[in-house]
Length: 130
Image 1: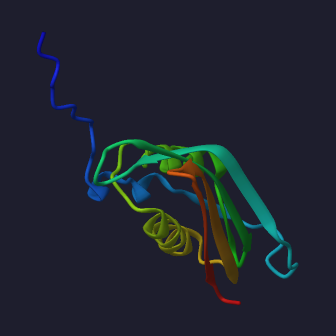
Image 2: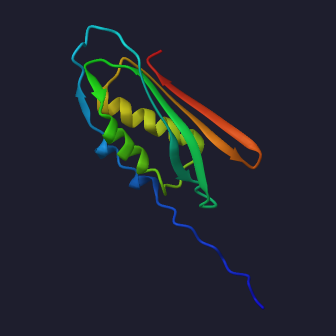
Image 3: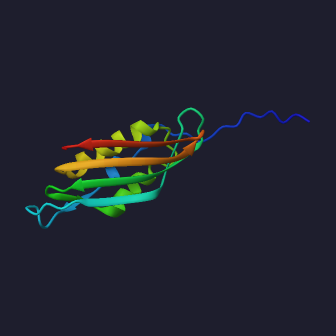
């Protein structure tokens, strides 16, 4: 019995990540300094080499200027990574770039803590304005 089949996985290019889904809404107290934290432990992307899934907790902490990130749009944006082939270090940098462009915060930090893969847990942090 021959069972040597080549397995393939659906790996999309990072060009399929959808920053256009991000929306910003007015911050009604732009003179008041607050810190906003939004996080999810349901983030997924895939390894660009193997196509195997990577799971992570993503946390976004920011001090808003005049705009806030609309949370449903953030959820849809993060879902666009679902089948994108991207390395862990690029995930946080890309999220940071896209969110800064969308809402222009005074400060922002994006953290990703990826689940164990090959016995290694990866935690990556990107910052702006600190």
